[in-house]
Image: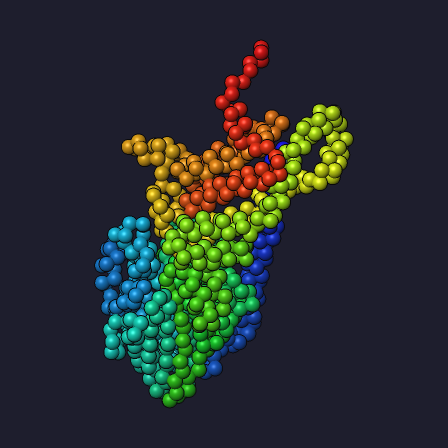
Amino acid sequence: MENNRNFFITIALSVLILTLWQVFYMNPKMEQQREQARIEQQRAEAQKKEAGGSANSGAAGTPAPAPGTIPNAPGSEAVTAAGRDQAVAASKRIKIDTPSLEGSINLTGARLDDLRLKHYRETVDKTSPEIELLNPSSLPNGYFAEIGFVGNDKTGAVPGSETVWTVDGNPTLTPTTPVTLTYTNDKGLTFKRAISVDNDYMFTVSDTVQNSGSAPVSLFNYGRVTRYDKPAVASTYVLHEGLIGYTGAEGLQEHKYASIEKDKQFQPGKSTDGWLGITDKYWAVTLVPTEKQPFQPRYAYFEDGRHRYQSDFMTDAINVDAGRSATVETELFAGAKEVTKINAYEEDRHIKRFDLLIDWGWFHFITKPMFWLIDTLYKFFGNFGLAILATTVIVKAIFFPLANKSYASMANMKKVQPKMLEIREKYADDKMKQQQAMMELYKTEKINPLAGCWPVALQIPVFFSLYKVLYITIEMRHAPFFGWVHDLAAPDPTSLFNLFGLLPFAPPAFLPHMGAWAVVMGITMFLQMRMNPAPPDPTQAAVFTWMPVIFTFMMGSFPAGLVIYWAWNNTLSMLQQGVIMKRQGAKIELWDNLAALFRKKPSPAE
């Protein structure tokens, strides 16, 4: 049938467009950006050599370090065999206790390297361990954020990785009780660091440098997020995990672990605003320089000692006259990428495009409204599964006029099916005349042969945006439905191969995953396709028969929420198509097609 052919054409064109966009636009663009960065870096190094290093001198006449050079990176630190608790207890710390976070700050380096998320656990089991976001660098999965300074001979020793800070007053960091750390060196510089935190995931680090010496000094402020491991599960093409930032004219920078391992480092242009850090699927740690001080961002991979990934920045020289002080402030986000809170930080704290910390993808103009609708309905129903079902109804209602015309045109095509068969038989040996006669028939009967593909074409972006929402948003993580589905963002936990848990064994890993909801989806798809007459072409008829089976196996590993959506969407489509066909006087082929499956076929002799 024409509408079945259009179905396949639509899917093929959609896949082709996405593939061509990635291959011929996105990939070359990324490579061009990387090549441009390499050229700029080489040019800067050449200019530095020609100038003998004088071009990078600070205001006090002391040579500045190369942009992005962060000293004392703990790359050679030995990995301890002790557990996490022992690694945390090995150094003096100040406690962190907020409604959302718990952990501690290491007084050596004032490093944030012990952080757990109170509201999130590793599994749906409420007794499972809390998510450990940051860990001491001595552990194999070390992951920390650090802010410090780079000095010179005139400044003396300045706070860095090995600096041991002193607690001044309150020893516990809470939203209502900030902490103050101090450090004084032998050159008359006193560093006072005030650390505060809100009720959610944002820390504010305010460093004041008091120069009690007799000469002006110049120093540089740096910040870095360093990670020694990477996610155990490799990221997919629909989600970015790795180094990320939004700074300067280049805007969004995304470097997957594999790409930064190959490139070693990427250094965009200087900036006076923005943010940078490392992101996972649901969590992130980012630094936000806030004083409008020009800074040089960098994304890097180091192989000296221990392999590690790092997003860092270094400011331009900060000049402090004798007897004066200077203050520099940095915000540090460390927590869950909750949509409402990320958006609130962007708006309230004026963090440029902080919403891009969540990977909404190319179709963000569909994905973000889709999430908003589901989240709004969740607040009404109290269940994300019901919100997805209600979203499906709303989407169906929005596209009802177009779907109504499409199904009406399909119904008219069914009524002229005998005439179409006559044309095919009459011009079986002349495809050109066959097509001309078909077009004349469409014109006479006022039929749009492409109408049947519109419901499917509209469903593809909605399907993809829902998949994206289920896959990337933490709000969907561990969101339960009813019955056996306890996590809409994970595949259906049941399996056809042990009769959905009735047989007391776990199916072998080599068998494809196919849960109960995938079977329901396959059945609804099968019934929906049987509402149309079987295609006369044997090849199309075979595809017509096996497509529900193929989709059932394919969808088995998709998030349960997506499979539930598809099954519910198929059900609504059948009801809508049945009502429209009945109004148009077209025969509904469902029952005849089902009966034909069980009718005994005549043998060749008969």
